[in-house]
Each structure stands twice: as structure tokens, then as C-alpha cells.
Image (cartoon, rainbow, N blue to C red; front, side, top):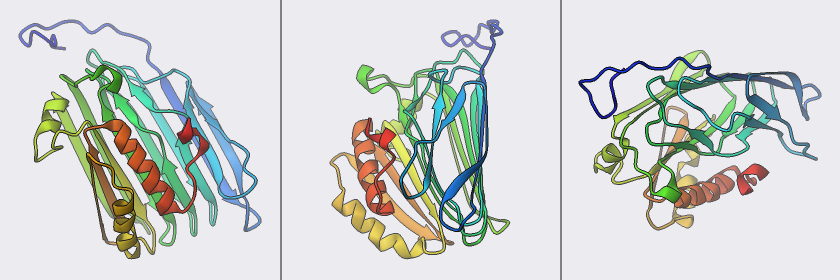
Length: 284
């Protein structure tokens, strides 16, 4: 690899033992009412915790016992939601992506929703440290009447340190298929001085955090005006947000100079949009 401060100087990258985490979860609805766990598998530092709930959807909380993701780590999560099952998938805390000396870390999530299935994918934010290199991918295969609500947020630099990303790489890929056909595709790639890129008006307008909310459901487009009303009611100074809807889905984008303000707005919007409280781990 090239030396970060001397592009003309090649340096050897030390070979390290890297984390390989995998988590798999399958749920179904056996009696037409309650969602139950049918299969669960864990490997490496990834763990799934399943809080008991007296009613409502099944809730699964993803935990990374490694405490973060370092250079060259590879994590994968697969989720199968059976017919008419209802699942909320979240994370126990924000995920930290540490500085890399070359290798790229990867985090892949693949979900499958059968007929009538519902999944709310609501991880807490990802925090990129200066020098981090992350490739993230989210793929979903939905039956034509399944319902997917997916949220992802990214913070660029540690807020308490006022850290800027002077060197890094972040790619974020979404691919959603409904009824076997590609319905939504989105790709983001930022490379180099990420904070400088985000400072440009055409990219981030000075944002230090961004988020995407995607709703894929038979009635998603019909919820556009209600979503815009929610944004108006939840408005926070310094946070920009806008929603649009087409092709059977709704997309909400959020940008903010203040990551904490973005999180606050996201909590308000998600609670109002879902008409349900967020998982308890979000309140810690």
C-alpha cells in the first residue's frame, strides 16, 4: 500500500487476524398471530439477542462483541421472514468503524420476506473514524405484498472530538427486489477526504451525518403527504430532510451538520411514521 503521508513511498501492510462475524435468523408465523424463532445461527463476534415482548412484532437485537469493526473485518447478516411474520431488527448500539491501514472492512445484510411478511430494519447509526474504510451492502428480496421499512444512518467522525475524515472510504449499496424484479437500487461512494467532499454544496452542504429511510410496501406511495407532514412537525434547526415516492416505495433523506440532531429527528420521524415506539435499545 502507499504511505498515507508519502504517496511516493510504498510500505508493507502487516498481516493480522481479522474478525469474521456471521448471524442468521429465520422467523415465521405458525398460528397466524405470533411470530416465532425457527432458526438462529451465530459465528465470530456477532450475536443476536431476542427480548421478550408481551405483544407486537418479534424483536431481534444484533450485538457485535468485538466492540467495533477494524480494517479487513467481514460481517454478514441474513434474515428470512416467513409468510405473515412480523420482525423488528435493530442493534444494541452505534457501530464504530476504526481507522484502517489499507484493508477494507465489509458489512453485508441480506433479507428475504415471504408473502405478507413485515420487517423493520432499524440499526443505530454507524460512526466512521478518520481513516476508516467500509463497504456496506443491503439486499432484500420481497414478495409482492411484503412490507420492508429500512433505516440507515452514518456519522462522519467522532462528534466529541470534532473529528474530520481527512482520509477514508465509504461505499453504501442498496438493492431491493420485489416479486423477483429489481425495484430499487442506490449506490453511494465517497473516497479520500470525506469531510471535504461533504462540505461541497452539491454533495452534503457541510453535513457530518446522513441517513436514509426506505419504505417498500403496497401503500408506501400513498403515505408521502403524511410523511412530509411528519417532517414539518418534527423539524429541527440545522437538519435538512425531504421525502419522495415512486414505483411502490417511499424514500426519505436526512442531512445534518450535527449528528445528535439527526438522531433526534430520526427518532421522532420513525416513531410517528411507524405509529409505534422504537426498540428500547434506542433509548439508552
